[in-house]
Length: 438
Image (tube, rainbow, N blue to C red):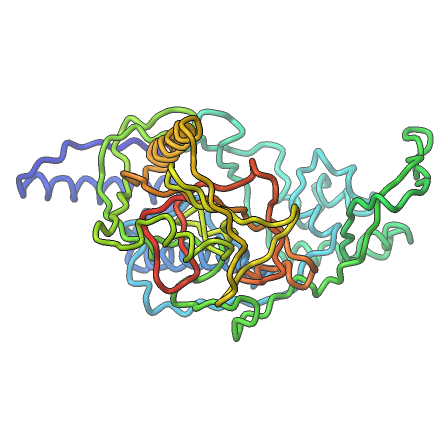
């Protein structure tokens, strides 16, 4: 990454000088990194479109599944954020295509030094000077640290592979595959394994010279078909939530909790060291006139119900206890119960009055929550009067419900006491509580 520094003053002429130098710096960046002679408006428009398309592909991938098997980002470097403009009218479409077969994928990603991982009939494509795709496997190539410290962090400047050329080069070699290799080179179903204490049998080793048999195997498995990962998103059949209120479970959004934001040097420690520069801080603004400050009122609203925690990423959890440091209301349930008390259902509640030792522990918990959020996340939550304890959602009872069913009553929650989550939370009710911690 190229270094850029300028002293920014309040005077208009200094602002103009800064803008002029910054534009020149960006122009040099594009000419040096991307090899263009003229940084035209068309070039910048193409950069913006490709980058937005990349962001959209990534979001689709994580929330909707693969939308294109063949799409790739066609540059080694990204544009400057200030050049991502005029994008509101972009029409982004993807062609689904189809995934590579295993050997095609390996040939597309492996270097020539790893040729032995492929069948012999393909290996010459990576090393022979007569190979029609030999330029994809250079012995010597440039790298660019681009502001990084370690060699493995560098940008590797090798050409992007043309999918059509790759498949065309492999076509004449496919007939030389052995039968066993043909069986390997297929897409097949996934296998889901789990422990079953009632299952016990001997599992023979497929390679007894190296590994002994498993004498007491307690494992079962089931086949997951290939189409199980296709997620229907057209009519939002999976989640039962108001899409205008929560876009997707886990989707980061600042929408639900009132806050203000500003830049301040706060030494936020995102990685190993505290930041020396300014941090973007989020300050929670609570409603001081709220009538829900009584712990009993809060418990009646959320105890036994699903809420979303770890704001702004919003993971589902089940509330199991509420405490203000003096009184603690918690679910009185048999061990292992994971029921949600929806609607008018009244959860079995027990009230405990906290002693001096427990009050001291509660105060330390509150202090720890505040310090953790400010030091590691840059979120200032101020005074906390009530702590809400909850169990994070872990998995669904059946495979069909496992995919993102955010509000299912069949959800499985962590049951161990030390797995209880403590973080800013958003209830699933329409009235949002903004100053309590989970």
